[in-house]
Each structure stands twice: as structure tokens, then as C-alpha cells.
Length: 83
Image 1 (spheres, rainbow, N blue to C red):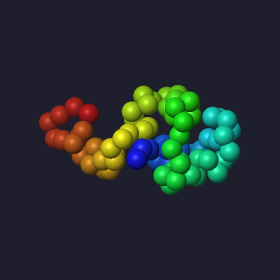
Image 2: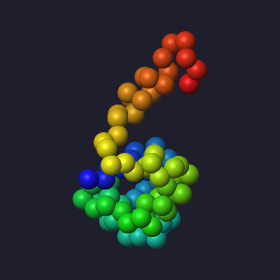
Image 3: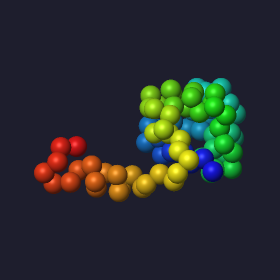
Image 4: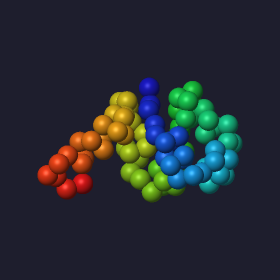
């Protein structure tokens, strides 16, 4: 299974499914399928999405489940560490 952060990235940047779909050249329903995990992106689509979000591919897609962002933020901002 391929995991992704598309919904989180899309919503935090205030894009609708339609806006994201238009930007990467797919139907808005495809974005919904990707967000729900009902469909895996082709390599081309995965690269377009990573480019759209200006992130490395591995920050958008992973073969392992992503740790919750709250956990990532807690470890990144431990007292006495720069974050």
C-alpha cells in the first residue's frame, strides 16, 4: 500500500480538490480517490503532485504509514533543541 499526505497538504494550503486536480491535469474525483487511499498515483502523477507542493516525493508518498504530524512536531521542537 502506498500512503500519502495529499489531503493534509491540500487543506493546509487552502486548495479545493478541483483546484489541485486542474493544476496536475486530472479529474477532481481522482484527487478524492487518492486522498482516501482508493487509488495509487502513477509515477507521473506522483511527481506532478510533489512538484505542485514543492516537496520531495518522499514527503508526499511513502510505502510506510506516516507518523502523525503532531508526533513529528513534538520531536522536532523538544526543549533545548532548535526546530
